[in-house]
Length: 193
Image (tube, rainbow, N blue to C red; front, top):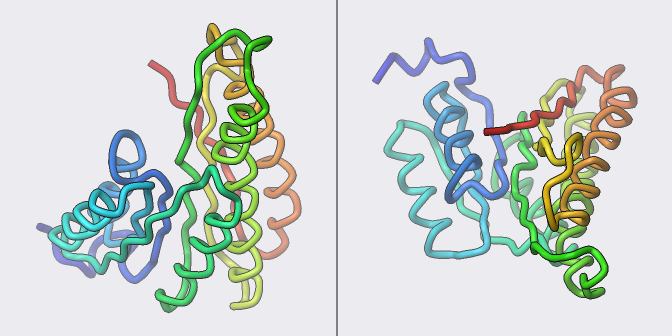
C-alpha cells in the first residue's frame, strides 16, 4: 500500500450509496485506495458491516449505515447518521439504484414509488443534506450522481427506471448550477456495457 499522505483523497470522507456490491462497491474501494474515509451504505446490515470492515483493511476509516432508500425517511436518516458520525462530508456518490422490469402499463403504484424513491427522490434528499453541510462549512465538495444509458436509449421494460435516471441528469445540471458559487461540483456518470 502506498504512503497514505501521497493519496489524492487523504483526509476526505465519502458517502457512497449502494456500496456493498457492484459499481458502488468498486467506487468505494477506489475512493478508499485514494485515501478517502468511506461511509458504506446498502439495505443489508451484514453486507454493510462486512464492506465497512473491508474498507478499513485498505487503511482508511469506514462507517457502515444500512438504509433502504425505497423509503424516503431512510434517506433522511442515512444523511443525518452520516453527518453525526463523520467530522465532515466531502464527497457524496448517489449510486444506489434498482429496477423492477415489466411493461409500463402493468407497473403498480407501489412499484413506481419504490423505483422513483431509490433512483431519484432519495438521491435528491441526500444531495440536499450534503449541499447544506458543504455550504455551512464554508463550501467545497463533490457530488456525483449515477445515471444509465437507458436515459438516452430505452431499456426494454424499464420505463420507470429510465425516466427516474433521466430526471437525475436534469437534477445534476440544476444542482451544479446552484452549487457552483459555493465551490461544490455536481456531476453525473452514465455507465454502460
